[in-house]
Length: 193
Image 1 (cartoon, rainbow, N blue to C red):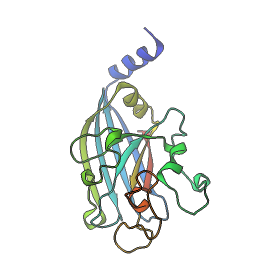
Image 2 (cartoon, rainbow, N blue to C red; image 1 turned 60 degrees about the horizontal axis):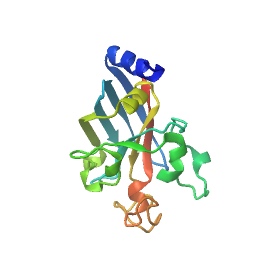
Image 3 (spheres, rainbow, N blue to C red; image 1 turned 120 degrees about the horizontal axis):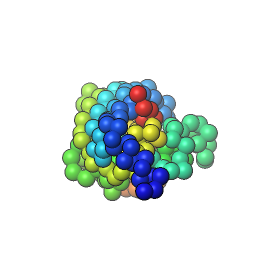
Image 4 (cartoon, rainbow, N blue to C red; image 1 turned 45 degrees about the vertical axis):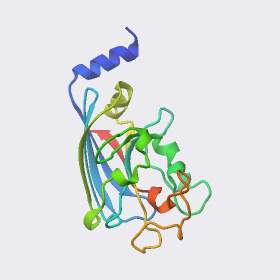
């Protein structure tokens, strides 16, 4: 048995692991929140509460992980084009690519990264999310070790109460979407508790 297989078996026998992230603002946001992910084998029990988000708008939210990522939230040093805002792509060296899309229903894979109509709406500026999600063994292990990051997206740069193209242009992820809809607004590292 390889060392990785032994570690996976050992993790499975150890029982559930709980990780938590304090969600801190990015891009001059003023919101916050907390995410809890309990890993039980390959099942994630995800709970996320966030506040002071753009009211009535959907907020994409994901679990990010990358083997070569820093496993942290991005900072101003990641603003590579020095335009005083962090895009999702600029944040990837810190948090890695999307591994789990925290949609309300349906697919939760990276294929749903931009499934805007399936992410929670911030009624009254708040999001509450609970869902059980199956993932692969490697990702479950990474989350259990505290190597994953939760990111909530959606910034109203020009404070007009909606996502539009006027303040930040098009998203680098999908030019049919405003950058406001895909830029990160909250981020937190899932630390083992």
